[in-house]
Image (cartoon, rainbow, N blue to C red; front, top):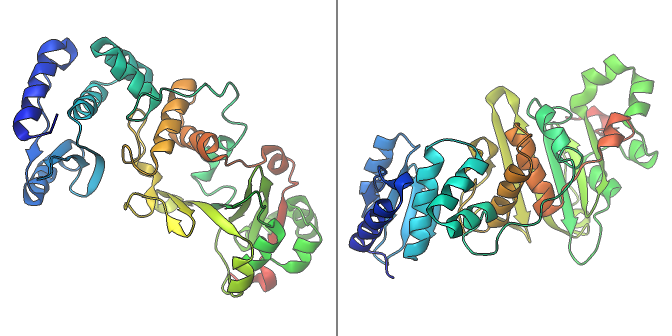
Length: 342
């Protein structure tokens, strides 16, 4: 059924009349123009849901004037999304939200558990410790430990991005890379305290699964000077996670085939992530990550750190990993930037 102001209001009245949990929940403010949306967002202080109904019958959900969280032309999807938002605001974690939606409509409970907007349903539980793959690094990374930037690179067609070449092209000391220097080696030569003072001039690199990783703080001048050599690496995808602890800014930047995957949002701040709420545009390019985040939340209620859950979702959806044992044993490949430039 086409969404109009009349059909939306009638459908929501019917939903609230049928279901006790929704009985006192009003339809969020509905705008019919961008000017009305701006006024709605101002009154909501950027937190509450505001709706914008387009001339073509598309209903847009917004948190704030510019942060679009869903768009649909289906009335049934609109009802579900409004119910999900209403139940989430009643409080409780993801499991409680799923149970409440089950009481309203079992199909809505299944949608919530799946994390998407179709009947695909939830994936199978991972069945392992979430802190063993990538999520182990998340709590310390919030304080820029071991490195400010965690960058991952993958090539197409079963190729592997050469970790040593990648590090050198970023500015790593070629001699240390050739010698396969580890963090333990650097601390042995420099001394632990001396290395700590130079840690901002270093990088760590290697391979885990399909991805090649490069971890660093500040990138030296002259990185990527040889553009042809960089292109020859065959990189088709990259993920860059950056922590700026002093400003409490944490970002996720995913590029595929030379284009940022972001639904037009730009570099995405991880600080927006709230347990129980899909972090990205529903039905958008990053919906696969919405699904993985929901699966992580429901599989691992014992993990209270939201960043760890998010990192586990990145591992499950994209395959990102870091070798925890190598870092614990100081056996990870590590090098200073060439000539100490930073």
